[in-house]
Image (cartoon, rainbow, N blue to C red; front, side):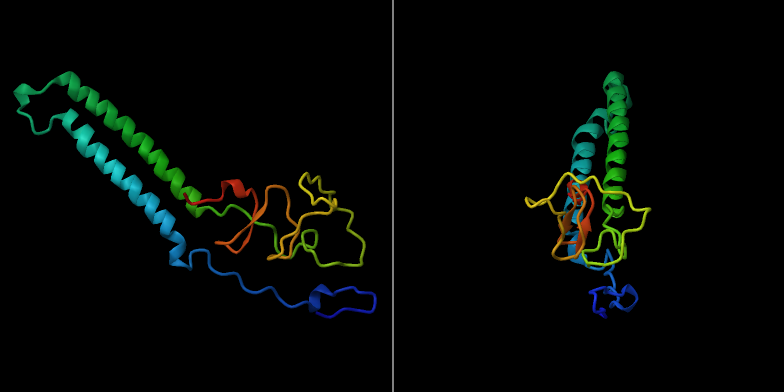
Length: 169
């Protein structure tokens, strides 16, 4: 990094950030996803096989079918399929949608000290979580200031906004 006598670091001469790794580049990250998916699939098959199919009475002679039990089986199976579809869609979306991270190349979040004045379009940050000294929290791995509810994820290798919702389980 090139710096002048005043300590100003020229962002144009600063080294480029290392390239980000692909989000889905490491297969071991998906162990929890495979476990959760196989558990959902096992419970789905068990419920259909052991509860819904006996209620539908598909192997019973048509003369001996209890229509109220069959109707109950159809209703329960439709409700079960509806809620299982919603569960699966929500789970897949939670795995595939990125939870958000602190912006790159934004001097407002960088811990690098610049000696030039702040632009007028920057809004003051109303942070609630601060260090005991009153300073803004920063990430020692990313080198960025952290907003409220932000924590560094060891799996994603970046700071995740609203870390309380970032988990494939």
